[in-house]
Length: 298
Image (cartoon, rainbow, N blue to C red; front, side):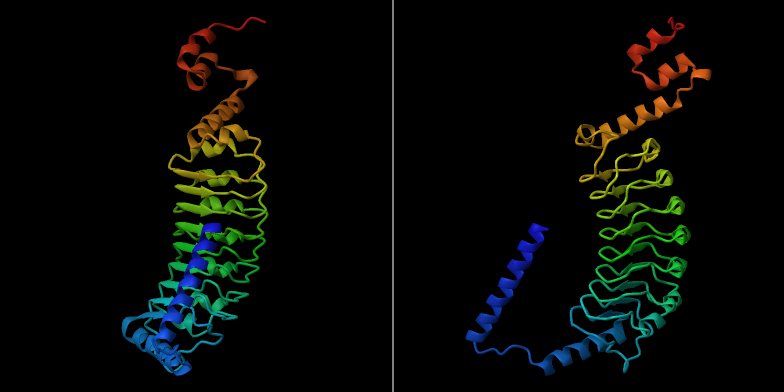
């Protein structure tokens, strides 16, 4: 964050410097007429290309009413001041990608179900308090809803069979639904900076490559998570971890998984049907196995 702030400050200073140079050279700043013409040009280009980019224009209302943009496949409306998703955009039947990052949107309208080609939706940094159930009737592969005001995730998320990346970080979510275990295409899950206390066992059935649950209130990684065999990155800092202990978590993924395997072995032990030779081979180092092949004496 600090580096981002630093870079932003550099960019701002650079822009101010460029403006000063332009003024010294007698070049005026862009006039409102020039800006309007630039927006008009962006809309004209969208008609031809099917790619609508009106990002960063401080728009409060949809400007494309005079243009036929129904063939649009990609739409970037980010960094504006839209209070809602423009109804006109929900009529772009071929739309595959919709970027609504950094607006003032408080709800997702049901009309979005018209976008049956939509695979990418970024509606992060808005003012959403709920994710509507009908959202998961879309063929989404990437859903980014970070930095909103969400307190829960609906059970219907389990319908999103094609979802490969889910980012619900920086919200106020307290519980993840067990139905998330049905997201069998999910590769990346970001649940960073929420209010989670428990990781559901069902997530262990997913083909996750990246899992970020940092900055929550989680005390335990379930032993079942040892089954996440494809996991390459696990980020868990800033949690009050007890199992595995913090000193093991600090050593990285390999040590975390060793600990989870040991915990699973301990849970598998049953006094009424304890098979010591098998248990030794499965849970103990090879050099210790022979020590436990004889009956125990108490």
